[in-house]
Image 1: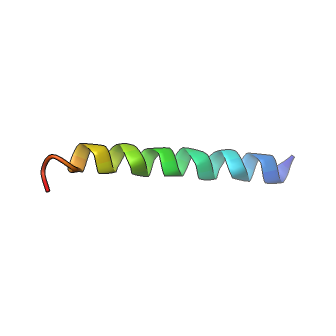
Image 2: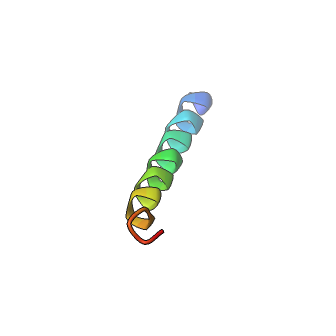
Length: 28
């Protein structure tokens, strides 16, 4: 159960990073 929670958190983090990259892409 703990590992599953950790995986979800990791996935959420990567999603945030991707969205941030998409937002910053036009600026760069």
